[in-house]
Length: 139
Image (cartoon, rainbow, N blue to C red; front, side):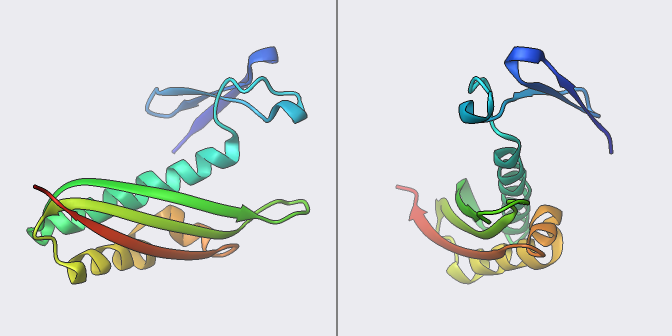
């Protein structure tokens, strides 16, 4: 896996993935940024969210659960001194579907966090990671 980051002078940092996708990142205005893109640490949380959401949906579909939507809201706290690593991360899953089993949802989230989600497994070395969920029944 490879990525390339190219400083774009006054507009931030252009990140290009090995698969050829690009995203512009920036730093906070108080650090000289212009708010032109997500912060690098926000990208880490986005990666965590994408990784775990993929796992949870995959596991639920494999368990023949009729899931129609999944949103994960993530809140994190960082250390106050450098390096300002994440110290606490909370993931709140909102799953929509027909007759979703709370036990299957809990199992899918647990398997993602403990076995499959590389981002979660890496981040738990510096942060306490907690999860909860709610199920919304499709009408």
